[in-house]
Amino acid sequence: MIQLTQEALLALIHDASTRAAAQAMAQFAAQHPINPPPPSPCRSRKLSPEEEEQRQEEVNSRVSRPEVAQTQEHPFSTAILAEALPASVKVSNLSEYDGTGDPQEHLDKFYAKIDWYDLSDAAYCKVFRTTLSKRALAWFNQLPAGTISSLEQLTQRFLHHFSMNKRVPKTAAFLFTIRQRENEPLRDYMQRFVEAVHEVPHVNHELLASIIQQNLSPGRFKESIAGKPPSTMENLLMRSQKYIRIEESNASDPFLGVKRKGREEEKEQKRKRT
Image (tube, rainbow, N blue to C red; front, side):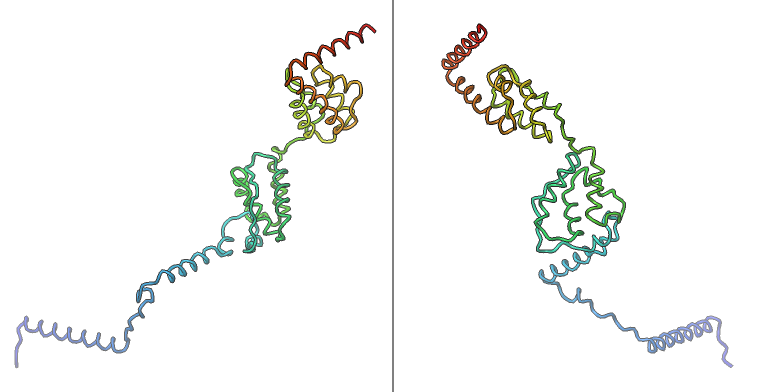
């Protein structure tokens, strides 16, 4: 009987366990083959500039899809967000509203522009939003998500929010403040007065004659109105042209102006004597 030392016995046990482990691994590999992953197309070759551009466009199109935008909190309803502007429509030259002017005036200008286009209500909503800037745009962006579903709803909220900026029509009392200044030419004054009249709707013509008679500096035109009040604004302007020409003629020829002034003073003295 062969007797092994302790060291030899341990060596035999180690060799046997190593061979058994190697056989087990070989058997597992045969039963479960590992297939290498197919080569990636991106790694197989470098993309051409045209292919790279096409790939970038595909990425951009996925990012800009309506369903992506709808996941964000937007004041427009999903129906409005889902509808895109026709590619053939180019709306330009629209005035902007920054939140400081008259909202009704901005809305009137907007309607005057879009009347030329045949768009859907959703498209008009998107176009109107592009006209807002600064404070007005900040107001729109803070509206609750999905609460705007029509152009009428949007414009009504717009007018209500900026109603404090709406220009209030002036009354006839405003016209009494438009007085002729000292040494102000009649032409300049009439221009100022007419501009002021346009700010006052529905002015009574009889009241208008009384106002301008009171506001004019002493002179022949004022006397003419007092003697025969103008019946219309057109009549007032037409009669003023005569006295504007006389005044400008006197200014261009001082000697002629002195002669006319002397004749007027002489007539006035005769009138007083009689």
